[in-house]
Amino acid sequence: MRTNGFALFVGEGAGSRAVEEASRVERFSKGVVAWAGGEFGPLSEARLEGEKEVVLAYTLGGAGFPLVHGVVEEGAGGEYSILGRGAAGFYGERDSLGTRGLWTEGDSMASDYRLLGAGARLVTAGGRFESGETSSGPAREPEKLDLTFEEAGRELASLLGAVVRGRVAGRRRVAVSFSGGLDSSLLALLASRHAEVVLCSAFAPGSRDEEQTGRAAGLLGMELKSAVLDQDEVARLTRGAVLPPGESTPMDLALWSIYSTTSLLASEAGAETILLGQLADELFGGYSKYAARARDGGEAEAERMMKDDARSCAERGLLRDEAACSARAEAMFPYADERVASFAWGLPFGFKVREGERKAVLREAAAEAGLPEELARAPKKAAQYSSGAAKLVGRL
Image (cartoon, rainbow, N blue to C red):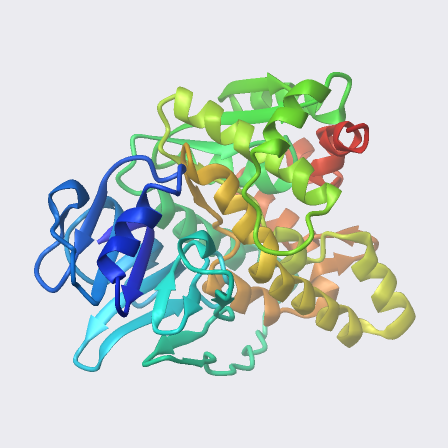
């Protein structure tokens, strides 16, 4: 059963706790169903008193276990946290890139830490929780790929096309959180081959994105919905931010402002799914610090930095951005697919930072896919800066 959130409560008072916690999470505002040893049914009709195992699901479709928060492609990949039920009882799993949360407290678990107590702990990316114990996913050394640069670009274009198709299949209309840069433009192009696409942008007046998004949308020939952020709006948005545990940074608040706004635009445009370009930089060498590390410490050191950054995204960044979108649209992160990550880690660093050009192989893939040259070669600038959101947060 596909769901945009789930929780398992175990122990005395599980039923009453389920009812109390379900009403507390505002971003899951409808479609709540409950299970207590039988079949899933509407929470309002469930009799949970005295039950010691209760499951809540904020459902998008289907029926029964396992509950999948995100998407799983059979035998291929996906992005997800899962709550399943087998012969030995309940288990939970988290995808290897950590795109969705999975939190535990005792024998209880949930995709949102707020449904559990103050002692809730995050399962590591790729981890499994079963019978009160957490195990890590198998350590896999990526296979080194024997490809020319041009061959790598073609294969990456094909792979990303398949991943995006899996994210948007069956959806009439999807959105892309759009900056007009390489990552979001490529997602928009690939998605447009399977669904109607609306580009959604949020930016401050006078920012780079104000000009770039309109120009890029014109080059793509796609509909653009945009919202102008000001200091009052950013203050309002950040007051309502539901961020993962830990100290919030200005970057957290800036990105929350962007993605909560673009997901609202998506919903208003009739799109229930929004694609985001997270992890493209960590996988393909988008940040200048990677080139600097390679120059100063060697390419192996740069690769280690990139992998560390990808792991850090599983602990905060991806959870933050999914939460920012989830009240209005289901977030999908096509670059954060284990097939894409495995392919990226199998390439030499010199395919990623090549003759001074960062994300070189991703740009090659974009050109192979037919993205206009201006967008395929667009310079990198982080969303919080190109949108002007970071500057607005700094003034709060």
